Length: 83
Image (tube, rainbow, N blue to C red; front, side, top):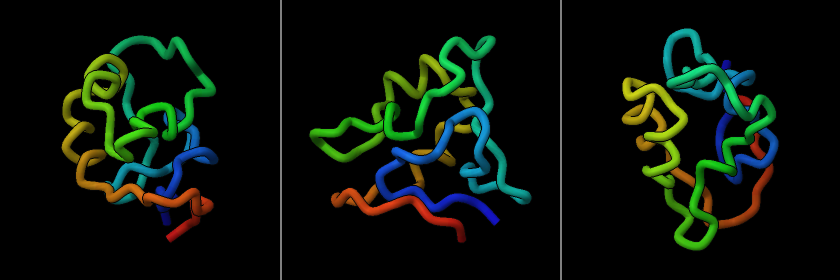
């Protein structure tokens, strides 16, 4: 079971299982977590509704970036769900 990302506003990057591994898990940081309450929405460009690759590279382990970029982002502000 993992969190399905639509808007990312309700999913914590470093705590919630949203990375599509088996089992699902949180993202792995590149350094000690500086923003413990960071939400997945913080890693999304809210204008283009696409992943902000610069922020991903700054905060997230390089092995996680392709997994994250493969996740579709909703163009609407739907609530994140479990799947």
